[in-house]
Image (cartoon, rainbow, N blue to C red):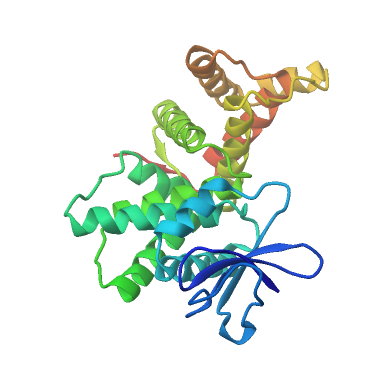
Length: 285
């Protein structure tokens, strides 16, 4: 590989013989080197491939101002996340995570700790991502000897939620999480029960709701419907309480986002509500 750009003594950008570009990390890789020279491959510690159609400018800027320790830490966190959840994250996670950790550590060193207003919602609705955030705090403590509170774990979790949804905007993740919280409040108020968060039906309901809200809030909601009014009428009669709850949720979505659910979506949501509220329920005190 040939060096194309030197960011600092330990981080370079290089190109292989077929034109693929990489960000490469290694102790002393860029020391006293020049563009055009060959990479000392025995010094390579970490390699990140850059997609040729969109080499992110922010990554280039970030490399120039961030030490190699942050890259190693982010890579360790992402490797843990992939081991836990599979390789389902957008490549943008490297940029957002390094950027976040870099400034979070700077904040903590100045005793500027932030509270996440959506802490409990993130922990409840995205438990796997939150667990990754908690592990990230452990790795930050190991690498930088800084003890962060779990609000920071929830901030880190939100980056993994974004990366799992094709790198969506953070604002959309915030909106989806807030909407889910409001819908669960409607559900709890209607049924006066505490749902079993460990049940399979709860997990399916949560997943359905997450993807539905992502589509609705991003304006990508499915407009076509099956036209199966017979099934809609059957569900309405068979599960009247769940259907009424769906109606309240639909009114909330209309008032908040200006979008109403299709007939199909009302059917799906009513069935999910019926399932999640008809098994393993505990009445509220």
